[in-house]
Each structure stands twice: as structure tokens, then as C-alpha cells.
Length: 77
Image 1 (cartoon, one colour):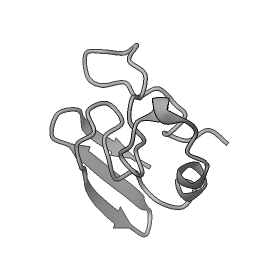
Image 2 (cartoon, one colour; image 1 turned 90 degrees about the vertical axis):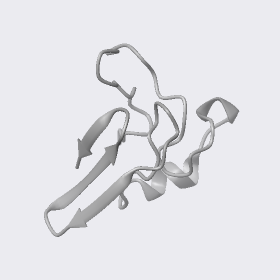
Image 3 (cartoon, one colour; image 1 turned 120 degrees about the vertical axis):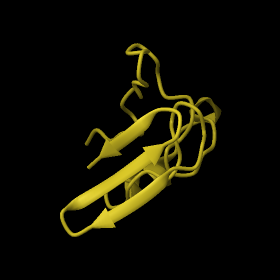
């Protein structure tokens, strides 16, 4: 299963940028795999921006979720 954790984060204006931070725990993805985070992301929305490591404003509703980074905008799931 592919999640936002394994998918490159594409900030506005930089379509080729890869995720540098885990979007669940906020730690560096270069430090190693995050199997617990990848498993949790199947059920939870992202909490941290994978591009800039800012904490995102997250809203969960019965039909999905939205997460907003002040620098990189909104993601939905």
C-alpha cells in the first residue's frame, strides 16, 4: 500500500521534491524506515508537513480528512 509517507511530497512550485520528514512523527526519513508510522497512516491523517516539518492543522470528518500546512497548502484524504 502506498501512503503519503512513501510518496514524494510535492510542494507548490516544486513538483520534484521528495519527502524529507515523516508526516506522522515529524522525524527525518533519512534516519531509517518508519514501519509503525506507515502502519498508522493507513488509519490516521498526516500530522506533520513532509516538506518543511511544520505541524499541520488537521480536521477529520466522517467522509475523510484535510491537513493544512501554512507553507505548502492543503492535503485531503
